[in-house]
Image (tube, rainbow, N blue to C red):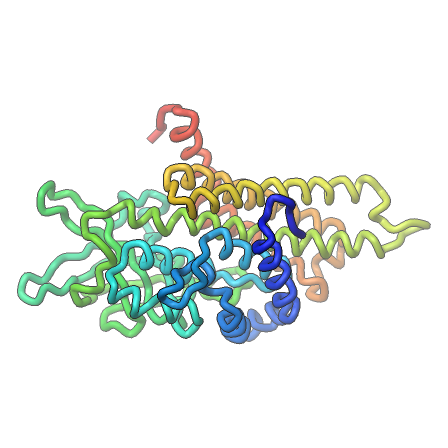
Length: 388
């Protein structure tokens, strides 16, 4: 599935990733989930081909591309049935933040490993009582006046992959010495740091990556654990959140394409009475509609990626939210229609669609709910007053 607006390089990358994804496919993915482990083989092979770090700077071992290329990789892996959730987290969020705002030492320490797959980084922002309101984040960082170390205290929830990630990029808040107000800052917390505790959250969700609650109990970090400028605040935070929304759109579009592909294949072959069921408009039209919705969502995702890679953070913020919204809705519709098309077979393990019903809902909820996106568009785009 390629589009005429893509460059020849993007078309070639899309075809290469699609062929690579088929070597693993849905059977590999479901087996990995059943075994409760990270898809390490897929991750490492993707790294060897340069797919993990395609968005990271060349001087640090990356491909020198942008979120446009990385979102394409994730979409095609999803369409092949083997999406890599940590592509959103490790290279897209953490890699982007470090590449844009990290110190030279942080870039040398982390970016080559993120690009070649030898290091993985998780991302912790959500808190039990903060939800989508980043201004209510209570994880705080204070300076130890004696040593200059940072001391972090707080909690995070719904953090993916902490158990195998080498470190977690934690969003905390520090006190502004001039105003006394708390401002967001990001810290690199290695997995085995004393006081950094994790507890798995029991999820009714089939995914290779487990979700965790984190407790930071006076976690002591060296001064250089702070990413970038202490005063950059929200700018650094949103440098990671816009790629997160674009990549979540890619994740959802890939999932929707996989489900739709299985449904179309089934509708061509399944014959009741004299013709395949796909000949009936009651079956054909909803599948055609799902395809249209996925294609439209992809166009907005490509626009968002283009704006972000061009350095237009404001324009990318609006487009990334819209892309994530459109892709999530398209994904849920496509998965639902695919299951419906297969009837009872849609709920069997053999066809691998039933588990996607729950997974598709995640794209509506995370990393930000569709209602909060509608809030964003109504306030920022339409200029309507806030209700909160």
